[in-house]
Every structure is written in structure tokens, then in C-alpha cells.
Image 1: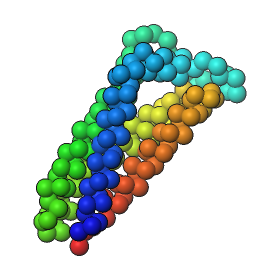
Image 2: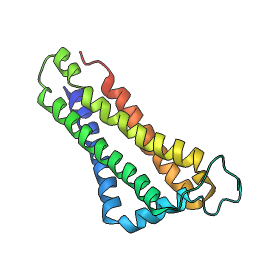
Image 3: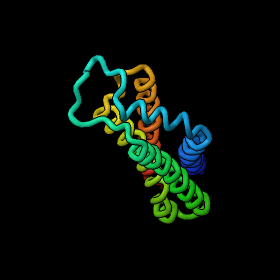
Image 4: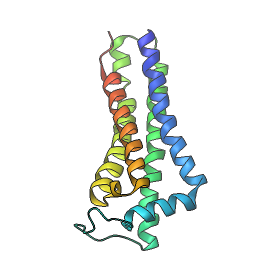
Length: 162
């Protein structure tokens, strides 16, 4: 039973992480916009000054990128919250039912990997080369932590309960 509670708590934490990051971005909207602009405009790239494709400075594109990030974080929060609720409501059920209720918890953790690995490491890190700046490198480190921990939590959640 303790393992079930631990799984529920970890999914709640994934949900909180998504919602808190989304809210922090919303509360600091101008700073978030400036951070995204800095990354997608590929400013201060001296190590690899050339890029495979264009940079973006058009406000419409920058706001779109920011909206995708914040929307992804909100979805992580909402889907993981639904997953935590489903696990909570089935915590005393038979193992088969509890295992069947893991779908949204797994989806929430998987979406966290899409946001923090996919958007930050692949798109921002590989395409926009944000690792070349101090601020970008710190963001990549954080994104790796969030995505990696979400992956570990997803694997733990997915383990069958007897």
C-alpha cells in the first residue's frame, strides 16, 4: 500500500511542477518573452555562429513559441493531476484496477518529457543552440533534470502493482 501512496505523491509532484512553471512564466510574462526571444534569435552565439536554419525575432513567432511552452506546462499539470486523482480513487482497489488507472499519470509524465526534453533539449538546445550562452546552458540543465526525473517517475508508476 505504501508504494501506491508514493506513486500518487510523485505524480502530484509532476503535476505541481508543470503548473508552477506555467504560473511562473505567466506571472513573469515579459521576462519569459525576453528569455524565449533571446534563445530563438540565437543571440551571442560565438562557438557555433552558423545555424542550420533561421533565427526568429518576429514577435508573433516568439509569442507562439512561448504559448507552446506554457500550454505544454499547463497540460503536464492538468493531465498529471487527473492521473494522480485516478490513482488516489483506486488506491484501495485490486491491483488490476489500480494498474488500469495509471494511464493519465503515465501520460502526464510522458508529456513532461516532451516539454522538457523535446522542446528544451531538442528544439531549443539542438536547433537554437541555446547551450552556447550561460543562461541557455542553465535552462538546459534544468530541463534535463525535469525531463529525466519525469522519465524515472513514469517508469516507477508503470511498474505493475501486485
